[in-house]
Amino acid sequence: MMRTLTRRQTIAAAAAMNIRPARAETARLRVSYGYSIGYLPLMVMRDQALIEKHAAKAGLGSVTIEWQVLDGGNNINDAMLAGALDIAGIGIPGYLVLRDRTLGKRQEMTSISALNAGALWLNSIDPRIRSLADYTPKDRIAVPGIKTSYAAVVLEMAVAKAFGVENYAKLDNLTVGMPHPEAYAAMMSGGTEIKSHVASPPFSYQELKNPAVHRVLSTSEAIGLLTILVTMTQRQFADANPGLVKAFLAAQEEAAAFIGADHEGAAAAYTKGTQLKTPKADLIEMLADPENSYSVVPKGSLIYAGFMAQTGVLKAKPAAWTDLFLPALHGKDGS
Image (cartoon, rainbow, N blue to C red; front, side, top):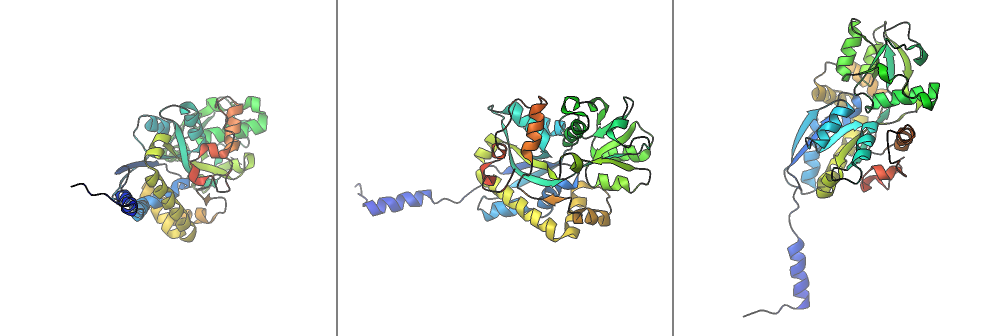
């Protein structure tokens, strides 16, 4: 016999059907970061299993995180397009390039968060080179990735400031793509063609401990202390995994707070995350430098986008910084 439910019983039954244990949209998350201390929030997240912690807290179930160390905008973009990564830490110019190329397509890229703000230093072991004007066609400058890496683009921005925007690519032919650790080793050896390096911390600081090395310029002089790195994902991944993306952002915010409160613990996480033998005292010194800061909120993203659109690298200039980031950040004081 069919039982007729009252209106109250119908509402209660419908509500009960919607009360289900939350679960992760995907059980595997693949994340990459590079070697600079700008990626430190991701290393802390790895070391302390913070994504897993916040996923469990949100009732998303068990999530396996697969971490990769990957340096250079070109390499990261290739991995994202090949579907080998779900979330990547990357210099903001590399992200802007890939977003521009995939806009409106199935693989369209977006950003979850900023990672850090600070400056890169152009260091040289060649005593002849004291300014950008001293570079000749025979000189070589190491950057993690040609044209699209953060180092390559901010070098162009510095050149544009010195010689006019029409000459922004004046030193491009001198750049050599090389991960930061290799560039550091090459310059310190003094026996290679690499006599200059657009270096990020800790390599920028370590190079200057060698009395033969001097700083030609800091990018803070050309553009200020702006966001350097962001986290990038495909928009379709973010749409399909909103709970996991939210847990990722919460984990990053906890990691940033940890870095600010415990420099020694953060330095230990860096060593574990990179396997580099950077002295702990040096790392702590860098983290105490107000030039290096960590926040999920972007600063100056439109400055990069404006320059890259002006030079023809980007076809579509974003109208607002919120165009570049997921809605979770839109209510914050970003730029």
